[in-house]
Length: 286
Image (tube, rainbow, N blue to C red; front, top):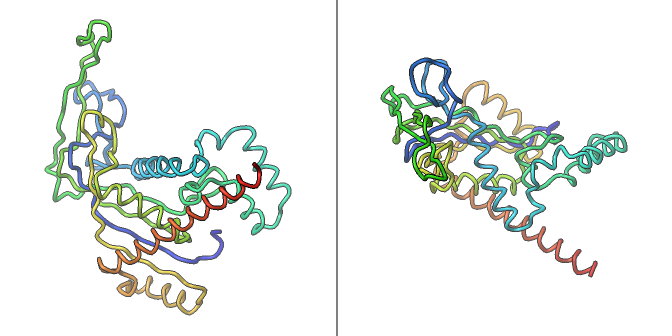
């Protein structure tokens, strides 16, 4: 499904910390400083790994899909089970034609993995590491104290006092997402997930039970291109990329909403067809 270029979606925006953010780099071995520092880049500036954003996004979408049908989002632990490995191995042995093998593998793949990937299918989109907007960061971190509680005495456990760093609220990070060769319903799934970030419903990092990690997404720009099987359109697109003339592929806010609505409707239709198909199969087996 990746051997022929079909479409590309590029999203850029800002992720703002509504409350302080802590994505830990692990326990520090330094003699001074915070016990639990946050992840930083080479310039000692705060950084949100793309994997943290993508993991939180996948987790939220998995919970939605499992609410519809548990088979739509399998437990990732099952991906490496001996039974699943044997199924994938046998498919690769039985089907040498790449197109047929791809179809068979997709039939063995839950819905969420079509977009996010699995051990046998590559992800269709990437999230770059989110770098800090230096205009919104004053160059320092906040340090907070924490303590482990003795469950028997319900008091602070002896010798368990620690401190940890957080990135202050009001700090912005630059977000860039690139999606290639996605189906309309897969883009709809992504739009629903991103809306969860836009509405502050997906927290990031640690300390979430304490109120840390609340973030808000603002999409600034959406760049969309699809070939629709027209080789001339693709040639023009490639030329415009080299010439950095991409204005024709930029969508204004109103146009973005139309795209989002179309993709979301494609997802809902896809899920309704899945439910209808499963209901028909169940009725026949009863």
